Length: 235
Image (cartoon, rainbow, N blue to C red; front, side):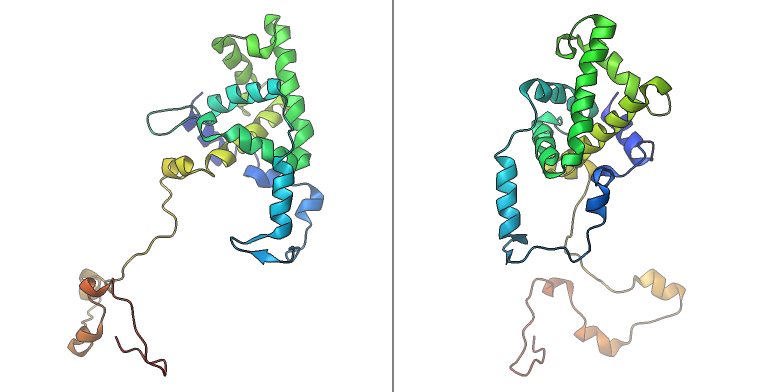
C-alpha cells in the first residue's frame, strides 16, 4: 500500500461515502441550517463552541494501546515520502481523538475495529497486533484495505477500514502539509489584463483608444484606490 493508492481508493468512490460527512448520525444530518449558537466571537467561534472544544480536549477517548495501533495504521495509509510527512508527524491520531468525542457515533465502530485487529492477529499469528512484524501487520491490513477484492467474510472490517481511511485523510488534508501535497493554493489575489489580444483578433474586436488611459496599468496594481467625501473615485 502507498498513499497514492489510498487516495485513489478514497476519491474514486470505492470507499463509498465522503469523508467525515459519512459519519454524521441521522440526528446530526437533520439539523436545520439556522441551528447556530448565539454570541459570535472573533474567528467565527462562539463562546459556547470554544467552551465545548476545551471540554472535549480535556477528555481522553483512546487508550494507550489503541493510540499505538492508530499510529501504525495511519502511517500505512499516509506514509512519509519525499514530498511530505507521515500522518503521525502531522498529528492525525490527535485529530481522531478529538473527532471521537466531537462525533460520538464514531466511537463504537472505531473501538470495535481496533479490537478486531487483536482478534485477527491472534487467529493468524498467535500474538497481539502490536507485537506483529511489519509484514504481518500489512497482511492483516490487506484483508480489509481493498473493498473490491476483500472476502465477504471481512465486510465489517472493510467498512471499518474505510472509516479509518476517511478520517486519516480528513485529518491529514486539514494540515498545511496536506494542502501543500495537494497543491492547494487557497484564495489568492490575481490580476486582470483584459481580454487577450489573440482572442480580440479572432473575433474582430479592437480596444478603443479613448479607454486605454483609464484602464488599470500593471505598474499601478499596488496602489490603493482613493475616494472623495462624496464617494467619487479620485485616484
